[in-house]
Amino acid sequence: MSSMGWSFQAYLMNLILVSVFIIPHVLGCFNSVISFGDSLTDTGNLYNSSPNRSLHYFQPPYGETYFHHPTGRCSDGRLIIDFIAQFLGLPLVPPFLQSLNSTQPVQNFEAGVNFAVIGATGLDASFLATMEIHSPSTNNSLRIQLEWFKQMLPSLCNTSLDCKKFLSTSLILMGSIGCNDYNDGLLGGKSIELVRSYLPLVIEAIASTINELIELGAATILVPGNNPIGCLPSYLSKFESSDKSQYDASTGCLKWLNEFAQYHNEQLQIELSRIRRLHPQVTIVYADYYNALLQLYQSPRQFGFTGETSKACCGGGGPYNFNSSVQCGNAGATVCENPSQFINWDGMHCTEAAYRLMTKALLQGNYTFPRLASLCVSQM
Image (cartoon, rainbow, N blue to C red; front, side):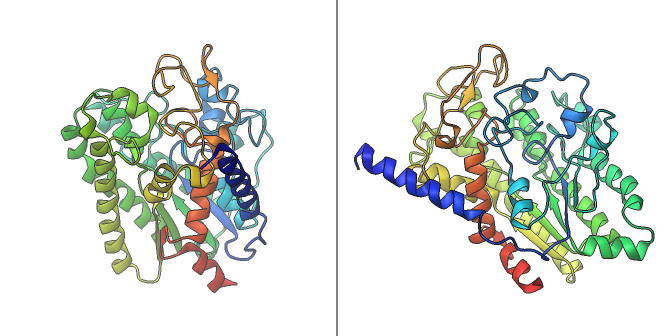
């Protein structure tokens, strides 16, 4: 197809993307969004808690597309949680730790609160440290995020009955979480065998948190799986190989890393099925982030991505425009002219355009089980 044909297709795709979230909001579906997780979901917790505002995540060009300034989100714009909130007709979900920042106004969390933190792990930092695995960003694990939530809950409801009612009308977003347990190990030089050995503990930590939330009154919990990490420029740079058989010919992604991500997702879904049997009154929704993102790598031009899919939009150079010594936001890093043409933003995270399409797949496609959109329709 000619370049003019592709330009016209990209134009049509942009029209579709704009229309996706101009459709009428699904008002009355959920009254709030409560979120836990890591950098795929953090809307500013690390930003509001870190004494070091010079971290590269907090510098331009982060946030340039939608907010026009850094917000603590690891993207050029909105994340999946932002699009979900907008779809539900709710305000963008504020970070919990912003309420502890004296320079920011006190937040009203009745319509939602976000406990996700960049770099957060499913397992406690102290456990990972026994294997010499350390997070470069934070020690705030999923257990700590749950403790924050339990400490804050009395400010939203007076009695146990009130809290159960409040949580029964809230959408709980459980993650993504667990990715950094693997990222910190694999990108830190640990073997896949070691990382695979504690994968069951990561699944157990997620399940334990879900069960505690159910006991508190949670009725609808959305649980994302892991992304296809073998497609990320950070991993492609770390594990670059001359052995072409290690790569998926259709996507350029590293097969063994994607197989590991799929194994996590399989084990997570087995555990979610067990929880469903124990709590049939609770709706546990699995969100297939893996395939919602992989489809973009499989057919990039169909979705309007004309930039190189293996490269980050923003980075410090190299074959995949990722350099761990010169990251997006650091001096010396460069940024692409149009982030909407790229799937990956900074080597680890997606662009707003990719997150928008992933959210469309989750809300309108077959990438949630049971389908999230059908739950909203049934409640209207």
